[in-house]
Structure formats: C-alpha cells, structure tokens
Image 1: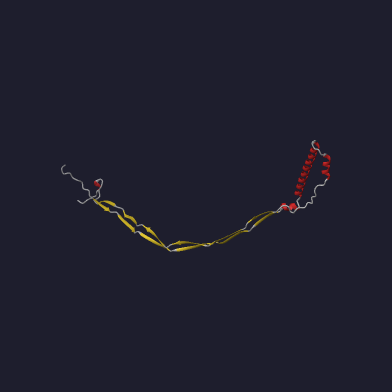
Image 2 (image 1 turned 45 degrees about the vertical axis):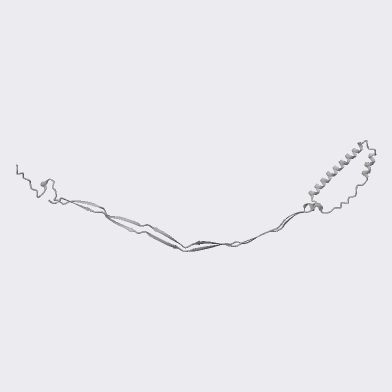
Length: 202
C-alpha cells in the first residue's frame, strides 16, 4: 500500500553581503599665514607752562573800583580808630591829677605842630607778580613691527570605516504536507466505484 501523505521540507535560503573594513587617508598640505602688526614711532611732548598772576601788582598801580572802595573803607576805619585812640589819650591826660605839667598847652602844641611830611613816595608796583611754572616733558617711544606666523604643518588624516555584513533572507523555511492518496468520499457510497461489502456470514 502506498503512503497517503507526502511531507516535503524547504530549507531557509540566506544571502549575505560582506563589505571589508577600509582606511581612508587624506593629505593636508603645509601652510603658513603671516600677519604683521604695525607699531612705529610715538612722540609725546608737553611744553613748559608758565602761569603769571598780576592781579595784585596791577591793583597796586591802578586799583579797580572794588579795591578802591575796600581801601577807602579800610582807611576810614583806621582814621576812626586813630581819632578814638587820640581822644581817649587826651581824656586820660585831662583826668590824671598826678601830672605836673599843664595838659591843655601840651595838647594844643600837639594839635598845632604839623605831622612829619609824607611825600607818598613808594615803589610801584609794590606787590610782586605770582608766577607758577611747570617743566616741559618729552617722551619718545619706538617699537618695531611684529610678525606673527601661524603654521599648519603637513599631516595625514585617517578615517576608518569598519567592516559590514548584510544578511538577506531569500527563502523562509517551509514544511509542505501533501495528501497523495485516492479521494475519500463521504458517505462511501458516493464513490462511483463503490461496491457494497457483502457479509458472507449472514
């Protein structure tokens, strides 16, 4: 009797692709960049400065209106103080009982005698000039130009590419079960070649 079932297996089919590792090398040329910083000559000079204050000297020759008023006021005060002192001295002389000389003729003599002659001779101007001075200064600076070098040496750059493996499944595994026997009829009498079974024992 032949087998009624046939079983077949289809194995898996795998395709793989291998990319080997690589090293890429890049050469960089040597370069130099030169920059120049300009310096040069620097000269700084400060001349002599002279400050002259002639305000007091000019006022001693030809005083200003304000100064004339102030001097007149001071002169008036001084004259008042002098007159007050003279009156006080004369009064003290009159009330002093211990003086043996007559007071009135002495006072009259002082009043009538002229004071010493004052010719008002003086040096003009009688006030010195005020002078302040600052010395001069000279600074000279010289700085040479500077050259800056930026070197880029010759070097090699390496780039590593690792290996790669690619897998492709072209055929998946399968199990095929196939019935190879004759057809089965249900009920069996539906088979055109059906022959009833005769029980001989009946």
